[in-house]
Length: 270
Length: 259
Image 1: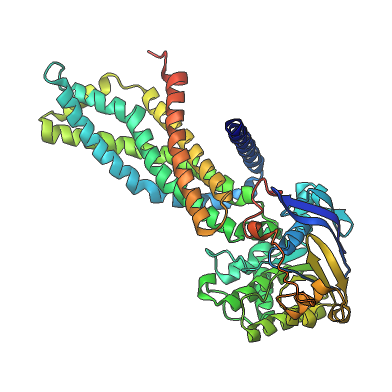
Image 2: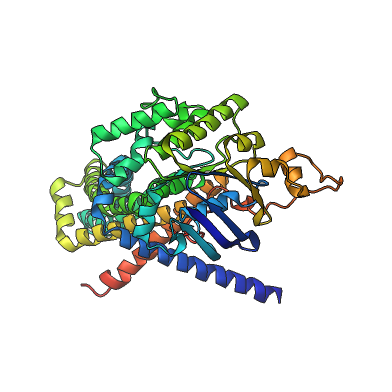
């Protein structure tokens, strides 16, 4: 189980998380939706200790992540797959080496076993023939699928997806959605998915949580969110420029300035 | 009031930066313990940062040797025996110019290379990806580079000393009509093993500083291409300044007072 409890995080004057609380139960796929820069990526980076909260707790299987000693944190990370928004593949390595990285670090498998696991993971994402290629030789959608393969190769208990379909065409997005559903159904992986794409959210989510002004505005099943009476939630899921009463509403983006390289030394635990 | 506030902010920023740098050095030192994690990468870095930098070190040494021989001859103006050209070339090359000029050139080549590479990895979340795969960036990225720099800079400088002396000797024969025996007489006259030891230790300290600064600036890069560019520039500038500071430090603490 992943649990954020009353988490606060600010970058300078900018409050990004402001009492964020959410539970993700085993076997679930919880989708976090919200405006760009609302702090969704910041929230999931706390789960793997890439960021430390100013206040509050983040628990994974009962372990309080921010207080874990370095060794235990690395052990915990071995059970959590993280799919980055832009895949974050190591561009100096082949795809095969990218997928094998985590397995080699574990040191539990021989090279032939690792090769087998890499092939298996790449087949799962329908990319069996790209092992010798480099990330720059692949399309954006293929890179994202390799990112998923890299995460699933470790057979993690949890996978955190950071905007896995952003910037992709509708067909490739649907392929990635299917892939995420397959991961959950075939491997029983618990997932947290960040997305702006409501069609994708409805397809893959067992529950949906909307992050707004640093905290969860509403959380519920797909049906509950679709039938929400909350004007902010309705505006977001219907993709309207104004609230139902016609009032213009475009929230500030507190997390926008800390996208990408927010986790350097000083920003978080490194 | 604005001036006081601005000064306060500047001081606070500098103190925080010093704290971050201190923490970075501490974490790098801690990461060296896990030899098995970082050593395999160190050999690759020794080739990339060391062997591949050899041509520029040698190029500098050749021209420095030639210029030194001619400069010495010009300065002596007949008042000092010409075989002292060998003395001046040997002393200047080994004690100062081979380590410092090579160090400055490598501050550009190696420092910028490391900062740009790690900066790109930082802004494209590759460093975060490493961490989520349970790799410690200090062990995987920083220590191999710092180890390689500290080990390979003296090697390059050692070769630069030999090549610089050789170039000075050839220039003396070719332009100054000095014989080999005369050049060697001058070179040997005041030569001590300390000259080489001093130059190599200095080079090792430069290698340590350049690679550490490159890693620090790279891992702190922010905001895309511009951030990576700024990190590379800062790495070169800080490295060059640090080389001059260390040069003065060694002169004051080790050279000064020796006879």
